[in-house]
Image 1 (spheres, one colour):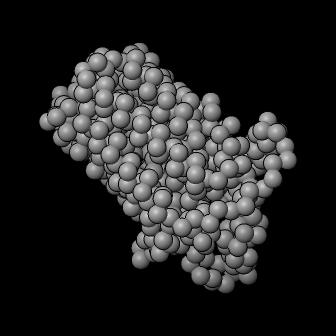
Image 2 (cartoon, helix red, strand yellow; image 1 turned 180 degrees about the vertical axis):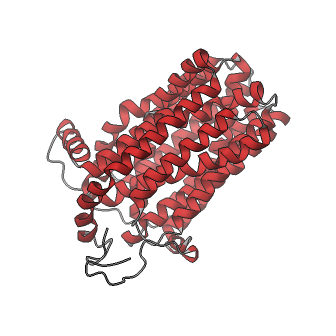
Image 3 (tube, one colour; image 1 turned 30 degrees about the vertical axis):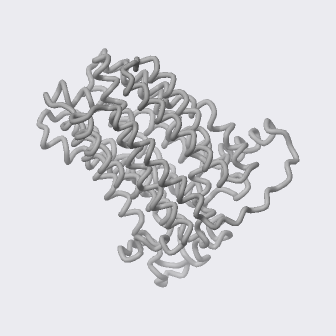
Length: 435
């Protein structure tokens, strides 16, 4: 790395694999990491079991898309307004509440299966309930990370480690779910997820959290929402990052909800094949998380966003055109790697650029772009698959992801110029480093 005079400075943008787990030195983050890890495995078990249950009950790709839409659409509608609430109250208490509500939702699902009364409309209603919780949980979870990390330069590592954790669970969860669904049914998957929330609730209760002083509320919620909107979409680096993330989420992410169709109709398999397909994508995403966790600083984050969107698209296209099961697995690994690096890099960029008093609102728009667009993608993919077929639907999504990556690469030089002064002011990068 060279400074303005052309001389060499420290390699801030390089990867150092010895630094991957450095944020585990913070006690609160270490507790969160352990409790969240157990809970996430349960969550992935439930997600896989839910998709399989919907397909078993209906045999319809459209219904897979509809149930996915129901569970995600509240995030698109409510998340931007949830950010106002998050910036007004203590994030720790809200996060504890969302975990308890998630546990209740999972317990109801298990009860419906055990009593043999479950119907698709139950899954839609409970999906909407889960989406309402997620509208607050996702942005507050992202915003809370910085309160567990004492040094801001470690924030990128904490976000990447959280992505590693998600994908360890994503790797283990589908495999476990595939076995459990085949052996004992979906109901036990929902029950296991219910129990898993005890881990994250305990870890949160064991933290030593210094509650930050909240700024007095001077304006009404509508004014605060408008302020957050203007701030988020008035600054090109934040706006462009969110728009590309929204495109990738809309067109690329829905591949997951169509996996049961590939497992059954394309590869002539069952629950085990479904689990292996999802685990392959999770393995690639895990590698992507480790790659990001090894980075020393935020330098190169914008380049990773554009590069990863393209990699995600290429992986989806290759997966869409293959009809050989053992070839599909490495192609899904490529897609999983690209998806995770794009999502986590976008997260890091937004959190490091955002002002502290507006972070909740910025991350609520992140939740809307990342998770909130998925329901429209699920509905679109379910409808499109009935017209052009499931493989072509995923291929089209891959092409759109590549276009998004190229657009971000085109904008990147100007975005870097606008971001540099903020990073220097926050002491995230030295003043003599070219960014």
